[in-house]
Amino acid sequence: MTAVTVVVPARNEERSIAACLDSILSQDERDLQVLVVDGASTDRTAGVVRDYIERDPRVELLHNPQRIIPVALNIALAAARGTYLVRVDAHARIPPNYVSRALTHLRAIKWGGVGGRKDGMGGGPAGRAVAAAMASRFGVGNSTYHYGRRAQPVEHVPFGAYPVVLVRELGGWDESLRVNQDFEFDYRVRRAGHELLFDPDLVIHWENRQSVGDLFRQYRRYGRGKLKVVLKHPKSLRPRHLAAPALVATLGAAAALAPRRPGAAAALVLPYAVGLGVASSRTVGSVDPPARPYVAPAFLAMHVGWGLGFLEAAAAAVLPRRRARGGR
Image (tube, rainbow, N blue to C red):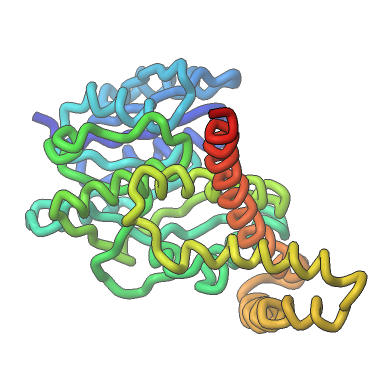
């Protein structure tokens, strides 16, 4: 049996997949099965993978016509020959000891899953600002994997590594969730009595969104997806998850109040404005001057996008029920 199955869901990643595969095939753990699950790419992603297959028999190409990440993960799970499964994003790179270090933790049996720090990589000025905002606690709350510096048990790990037998026992990933399927899976891991380890020395170099607009749309999807997980697992909801929706509601109330009572409207938004200003002033020092004007907008995009998406999903869930009751 192979030691590790590395799973790479991919769609239209011809610019990034080669660097990703190079980093995987350079691991000091050599006993690998590398499964790239292509989601019906319209570019040369599959062709690039086939080139690697010709050079390295550890690489295999699977197909995911549904184009949904949890489906890709389950396709790979069915084909996995490894004792352990490690997920790597197609636009990410991992250092040579990444897999072996994850295995060291998993072989200790204590942990049901292991993950590391997700360090964003930005190309242009906006991308670099997005990376800095995502590494800030103000930006991502208690998502330890964005900024953590010490090993600790956590609720969720990005691109986790797990024993294959455990993943199969839990039924794999929920294919009804287009986003947040990794958090939902980790919730089931913990509910089954297993702990998750965050190890900051497991570093994932990950290409984040390269514009504030794309970041907003990404976090809006995250917010919508979070509501679906909450409806499925109500006990997974934490007070912090309501912070961004509360912000959006506050901004909406302030906008409605501003024409009549501008002072009261300003008072509503002042606490967040102060927090945004302080966090931005602390964060701009970590980026170059061209990137600095994008830092505050990046924070806003994350918070408003997530909160708006959550509220939209909540409204979509509530309105049909009200209509159904009204029609009785």
